[in-house]
Image (tube, rainbow, N blue to C red; front, side, top):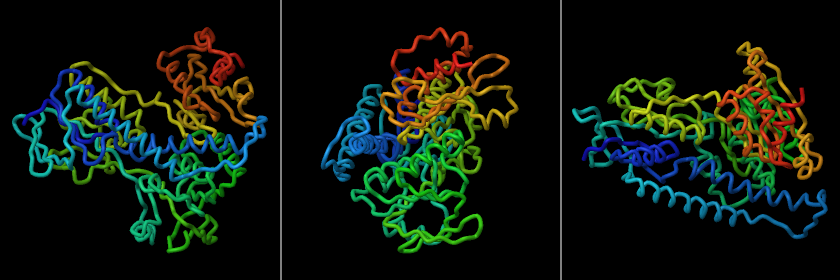
Length: 455
């Protein structure tokens, strides 16, 4: 059977591309080997936020005395939290299935493999069935990278070394959890399990947490969580995982031994491009990721790639936009993606939201800019809801154009309002134009207005 478009992968990029293509009148086949929604919906974004919300409620109860609220006997039933997470995921997956059906996109479950080119386009097999697509969108996502640490593979086989997939299905609360990696996934899971009673240690090879996020905010976040009881071991390398302990070595050569109940491996992700047949049609790869241009096109005419598999920006919302760009270009509506204005968030408590340049990246690029830095205490809503809070906000401004080039926020609701700065950047608004924007009061996002008028 011949389709206008075959989509390999039913994650954020794949299912949204299938919806958009179907809505545009294309005959679409979406091939997904597991569950629609991909890692984001089933093993990442949504499940972690479900857990973190439960932890946030519990934290609020446990520290309510600061706000004049006291409660006794509060507890977290982790098994029930996981059950609610599963229910939420199931409902959302069902919604995706309905949306695809409504848009006329056909879905096939199984491992799709590219077999080669043909006169009509591209041949793709799922089991013994072969399909043909005039165009091909590769959206196979990514997988957790597990470094070749001695004992890690054996630990995974025994169910004691986990990735983001397994830890979200864990129904018991680990007495001792060692998190290897202080990036987004590691910090979010460290936050959750610390809140519900685990003794958590985060081991990070770098001298800071939160990856490429603003260094000062990462430091404040680390100190916040140290006060909550998380132990951070920075500039430390994991050398071995035994049946009972994680063996580490500091930058000075000192050896450490960390007993554990479970170990979470969260050191990064790799594009899923192995075994899908990209070599059969000559798709160019760079360090295992599919090379794409700003139109989401690969080096092979008629073949596009979106989402984590191209390694550009491994975020679900990036995948959504990439999918739209790909379909727009397939249907004759020229479109390009701009990665410089895509926001990112670490959903800890407080949240760390960022968009555009940081002080470090702007300096490295030699940009002529200034940074307006404010305590979040300039926001009345923040003060009302955060007793003793130490959050900050940074707004980076180009000195020549007087336009915003980046922003970072460490506070509650950062995930909800950081996009506002992205919109201002996309619209190329000057500070004088932003000053005319009316923010509702009291809101945490008023900090943007405060920063604009702070000079």
